[in-house]
Length: 603
Ligand code: AGP
Image 1 (cartoon, protein in one colour):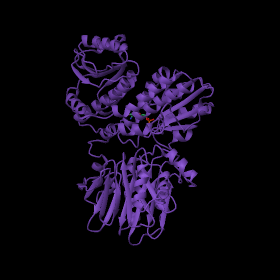
Image 2 (cartoon, rainbow, N blue to C red):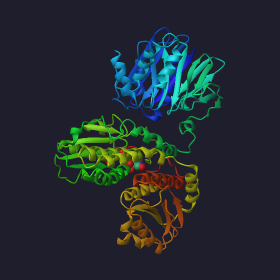
Image 3 (cartoon, rainbow, N blue to C red):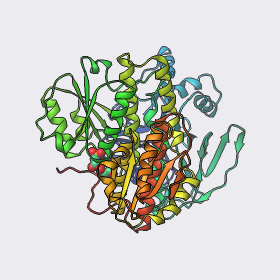
Image 4 (cartoon, rainbow, N blue to C red):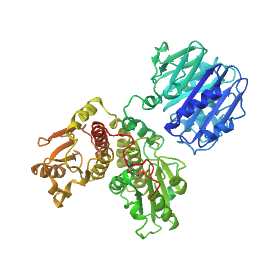
């Protein structure tokens, strides 16, 4: 996810900005850049790791007072190229921006008509040209800045510097984080998109909230919101860097579970339109002559593949098959060219998935990657790729990568269904409405987390866990079981609820814990009977459902929803939180569980 830094003062602006960007590296990025304004602008941008940018700036010196802005970019609109890297610039203004400007296409169209030319494919570049355009009808730069941000729809945290006011930085925040630190003694101002770059530089900071904007000059801050000029109280900055990166959460995994609602909004952004799904990453012709989609992945990504196979068939009415990377590569599969091969991977480096993708390519299949890391091996190899936009995932046990993969595959199933004429207008609208509601469903409430925290103390022993569910809740049960075993080291298995009586039920006794996914909107009565069968054999049962279940030993209530996918995402949160709370109580290292690696590059 993108990062922002800014500085104004007499210290070495270049070093301060580069140090700040270094602190933001943990969030993930694929290009970086810096602009420093002394007499003139100096702009440096490079693709890849920060070292490239550092090398480019090697001979550049800063003397005396200067103003600077810097950025690490995680590509959303446009590839990770130097032209697409921030800061973007117009004739006399430079800008860095996090977030996504939803109406950038309309703004760009108008600016092109007025004669502006663009050097990047980004949504951000429109802001800088719009500012210079607004200036023509404004008395001051600030007025032009206000007019500019009032025309932006979407999310932004942005910093803007302009040549005739070299001692000023304009800023605005809506939907993306932005923090200001002030050193009153030395008249220095520091901006960043999270705490980490500010630690050691300043003690007190302002955490801007949505709708705030203004400018800094010397040690002064001029701040506005929709009501007019406002005063803001400074807060204390955390002292420890890793604590700062965790943003108040105990573990990265916890932070990543909590930020799912936000990253899923990024995944949807620009792809979910009023009455259709739009992917500018590949042409619709990708599906010409395709009769089957083959989804291939490992681990958690395999569970997304399996879950989405229900969506492709039910929603998109399109044939799919699902393969484990480690199995597929050695089974001498029969591959035909009417198959689209889809490799799903968080890291983009998983050896078995990569080898399977190579095989598919060598057999002449068209290929698509669904991945969280641009420029990874899988993305580079596939013909096309859809990035999941989860931001870097630090917890080894995957959470937000799973959620964003699910959302991409859900969108793809609607896209394919519409493309093939398998969905009518109303059906498309219904699925789109559901997609839009997913981020809200992913908000972790205090009540839910507290309930799971308390309940987790009863699940620290026993001879095993069954996670059970039907239909798309079966792959979710598999994922719940995988999460629990990865970080708690307790034995857990996922099963289709209807399979119990074919063998596994022999294990049922009070020391066997059943975690039952019981949605209301799909196969409710059938799943309920399967849970009762286990209860009758004395298994200890925890039911997750919006409906009361009198026979359960424990019960976690979810909200009622009108679509099974909203139930799916809420239950996903529950199993993630439950696994994490059990592991925390067992005093395990939740972020770095034993024997596991984040990127599995060996077979
Ligand atoms: C998930 O919690 C795991 N750590 C693991 O199963 C992972 O999903 C698997 O190794 C595949 O990784 P990938 O998505 O990066 O390809």
